[in-house]
Image (tube, rainbow, N blue to C red; front, side):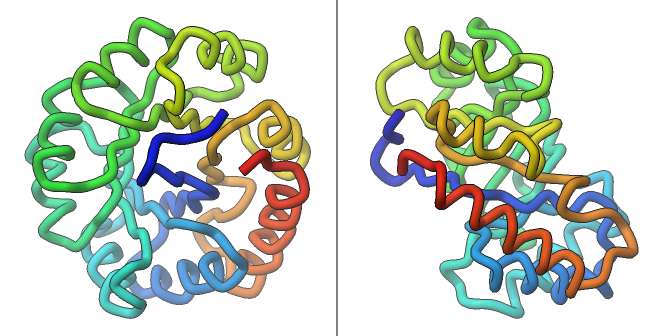
Length: 208
């Protein structure tokens, strides 16, 4: 499935639990390995400070996001910290609308086609399939058959080195990868090695 112009999710590193002191080095390891974006969930320690530091440490065009964004106020705080992506576990039209208003990439979570259509109606161009392990690859294919052509579908939750190739071959536009890439305390070297393996799998199997 091809994505709409300007929507290129790719691989997103979910750095849940990262601290500001570790954030820059861990994010850099993911970027250097070829990840397209990093996301710091808001239920991490001092998450917006981590976003600020990652944003300040690299090129402006790097895609740095905030995750577990639940309210429009969260969106505004993430934007003030320098986030360019807003990722949520759920579909809230007001969160999506505020994200779009501020010119940020919106990745609302959806577990049903009804939620996915609601997200698109609110202005999203990409859908975070969450949890990916519950919707499944067959579910994603079924969604793709009814959603508008070019909708980016990004599975998150249960995506790892063992199944990333299957998601890619099925036409996923990207994937968010969390605990199989990073857990609090992991060193940048460890994260970089895992990230490189995931990037290799993605590029060998993706339709993009």
